[in-house]
Figure (tube, rainbow, N blue to C red):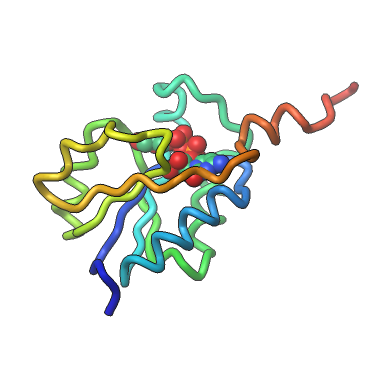
Length: 134
Ligand code: C2G
């Protein structure tokens, strides 16, 4: 029995990297169950984020992790309250680049922002990759 029953977190999880894993492993230390809402390609377009890896593969990679119990699609900005209530989450966690942005959920569950892993991001990886036909 951990401090929380069920935690939920949201993200693109493109070009999965150690920063993503650090966060998910920290969440798994806090909650018995970990749900990850992975942003669909359509929602990423809304976020103005270009993704390298398509949603089905991004979702499958996250779902394969021992520390993740369930993956659901993140289709819009508005679904978080419904998700927290539907899955009876008592914890919502995000990296602290989102500090304060989801405090509206505090009426339904604990909201935690954990320190990001320094020096790694999807953008760094994408910009470090060799240019095609380069
Ligand atoms: N993250 C981290 N350390 C990094 C990079 C990312 O802790 N070096 C965390 C982010 O803070 C986020 C999660 O990993 O909690 C997923 O990051 P992204 O895939 O970049 O997700 P993002 O585009 O921020 O989408 O509705 C919320 C959005 O869907 C979040």
